[in-house]
Amino acid sequence: MAYNMKDVFYLDTTIDTTTSTGDGVATLDLSSYVDPIARGRTKGTGLAIYKVWMDVCNVAGNDAPAAADNGQFRAGLIAFSGLPAFAVGAASITGSQLNAANDLMIAGIDYKGGGTAAGDPWPKAFLEPSIEVPYVVVRDQVALMISITTAMGTASAVKCRLECAQVTLDQSTLNQLLRTQTV
Image (tube, rainbow, N blue to C red):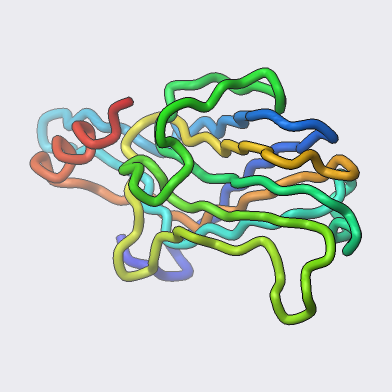
């Protein structure tokens, strides 16, 4: 399927920060959009993610965090993390999960609050998929992960919106994606 108005749809997920440090995970079930098993003449399907937008706002979802509000974190959308959902402080993200070298990383942002200069807005994206080469997910979940290194002054929310479409995959592409999207 092509990147067009007929095929593209949106999915979203959110994770709330706290006023302490720690890691958290919010999962998004994709099982109704992907089917990595080819049956007879039917090809497997994956979910092509063309764009990801991430937003940091107050928990109510209407306002940006206050300019003087401290806090620093990294958040990322990961294909098939293998982790269930955890509130911030209850998860332990180990290894190199939240960086651009992780093959399962779809998109990621850094956020730093408090005293940022005008014209230097946060969050800053360090990884994004593209319309020309989307990230194709063939597993049944993605996870929005967060690692808070400096506690937020007030609880905030990281909201994530995915622009995606279902795509059919030939067997060799499907097999390659299944191998690379393994924890």
